[in-house]
Amino acid sequence: MYLIIENYIARDVKTLLNLGKAVPDLRHHCWIHAFGSVKVVIRQREIDRKNDKSNVDLFLQLISRTPEILPYVRELDIQDRGRNVWHPQALASTSQEDLTTLSLLLVKSTRMKLRSFRITSTLVWSNLPIPLREAFFAMFSSPTLSDIALSGILLPVNLLALIRNLRVVDFQTGGVGPPTYHPSVASSTPKLVDALKIRDRNPFSNPMSVLGFSDHSFKPFSLLHLTYLEICLPGKHLSTVQEGLRVCRNLERFKVFVGTAGGLPHPLTLGSLTSLKSLTLSADITNILDSAIRFDWVIDALESIRSDSLLEDLTILIRTPSLELGKQCEWALLDVLFQSGESAKWSHLRSLKIIWCTARSQDIQENRNEDFVQLLPSFMPHLHERGILKMQTTYSDTQYNFWTFT
Image 1 (cartoon, rainbow, N blue to C red):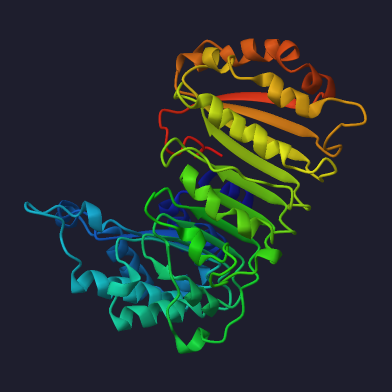
Image 2 (cartoon, rainbow, N blue to C red):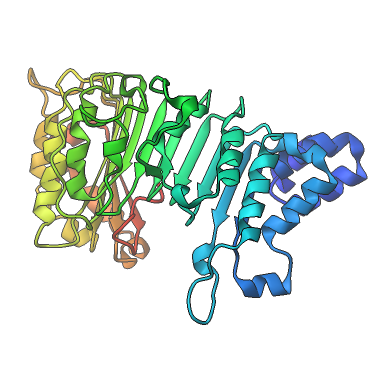
């Protein structure tokens, strides 16, 4: 029976609840799957509220009737759809009911065994009433909480010091704000997080300036302790990353995503990443006016890596109007990095994957990827000789985050 639950109904919450009710011996196993990851939505469209109870109302009713559910919740994802609340004149303002609902959710979370907390909000921290901030502080005190993802809330970065066992931090657009005074974190030391993700494509923000990547900025995290770093920034904002990279000597996995918006990518020097084992770089070459510059940016970043690097896996994502135009890239510049002999680079490298994000859906239907693979020996003979090159094609109709499938 356990195998049936695992393989067939693990995502069917209604069936899991009915089964757990009908067979008490299976209730524990059913609840693990039904409530392990919970997504709730606040401030839905008013028309939805007229037709039915909102998602968050139903969840609050459920945990009020059956509080035994709370310890089963390991992941809580709160989505604030305030921007979608339609009024004839303008967007609806945040009501006291909405704030009370969010406060109640956070207070209830103290009885959960939360491992992961995610919030996507249009309510910025500076505008939150004190009781709601206190509810956040209560949630941050959870001894099991280790992963947090923030978007839109502009949480003062130093308040993350309240999360005792923090290991993974994910800041999306507008997720992080400058530090503010709070007595509980006035004398805190940099957090020893393992993974840091910064995905902010707003050309007017500068998240790296509050994350300790500048020599003279506040240091909320120990960059020396980082083993995983993922950044998605406008091209010109890559200049704010370089100082911090020099400290990331234990970094093993690094992903850099740069779309078309935000100007040309600033050069990145990766020679200081002596522990690097996995690297992902991206380039959008759909604009013929700057396609060569963006492709060369990838080459320059690779050239900056030490020859004796421990690099094992390399992924290059390239967005192109079509695979046919992709053939026009200066592949010899990439291939020369992999020539054999005394000057051979990266002896530990076992895989180089080129992932095409084509804007032409017919490339997939016509299997143009296979056509390109057949040309690889002539385009990149050194890479072909090493036998580490793989190629994949996927379809992408957006220029801003064409890498979202990764």
